[in-house]
Image 1 (cartoon, rainbow, N blue to C red):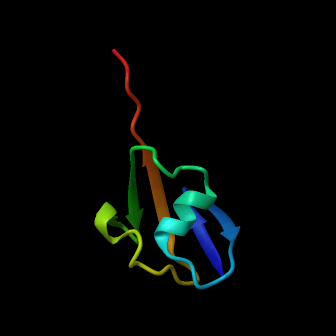
Image 2: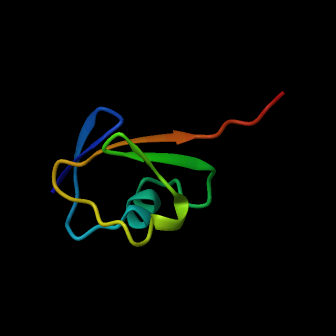
Length: 66
């Protein structure tokens, strides 16, 4: 299936929950926010939300500092 991640097209095998995508992108354990098809997805739904062909995601990482 084709997913759009931060404006880039990437291909993955289906089925794929958001939690697995986050892991494959090397973002597991990091403070991130995921927007799926223009809606913020709560972290509590990462495992149960299955991605579909053509989904659009924006993934933002929190940056600390001072």
